[in-house]
Image (tube, rainbow, N blue to C red; front, side):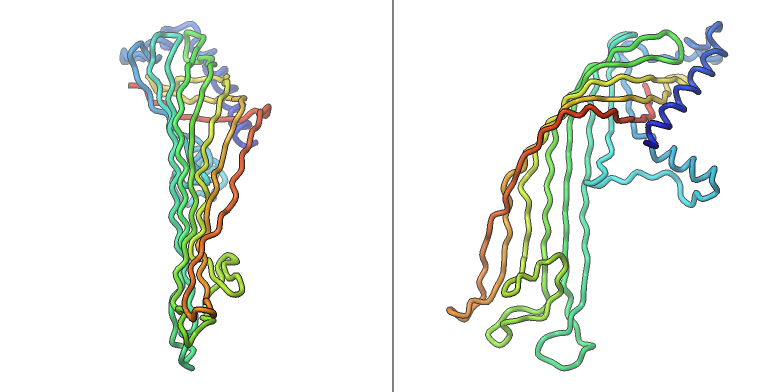
Length: 282
């Protein structure tokens, strides 16, 4: 909702400024003689403008403590986009997104085999995630001034992974068949402990049409806002969990592997999604 509101504000601002230079040559060339609009053969790089708007909103509210930042995580795989301008009305698009997360959490438990609670061992939980996407598309545009209308279509392929690993300070042994360990995520199975929990790789495909506006506030620098509609499909393969337990029959540690089921998802999305980008042409 915030992105859609910002997009509306951008459109209103663009129309108000356009009225000021509609009868001048500034919409084609700056006062220093630099071309304002992209030309055939130009390339562009676009980044998500949301952090800048969030910072501006905090600054106006007197709450901004930090400069704009980009959080590149698997849960928030912010997109980098690029264009190759063919002519005044056509451009090829590419998009790339990369989200990587590596999280580590420790807990301390009393060491088995002694009575001093201050003597502890470390249990460690590590979670790693990755989300990668690559897309391409065609953009068409209308308009000759600073404000341009854009539309076209994009397709994108993606894949992702997710794995949890556990290390425990107190080990199984013949004299310690029930070690004192920390239960991070329900990994205590009452008679066994999860050592690794790995989901299957997720593969996805998206195809969408987009429409929006792009306003050039400086020579070959622009702010664009778009709405997109499309369909998506994803498939997740089977994963696996590695479990460690004490085998009383053989009087030894037992390690076993069990399967984690995958799944698939398909959707035709009829909900508009606002996307705001800062674009740099060169």
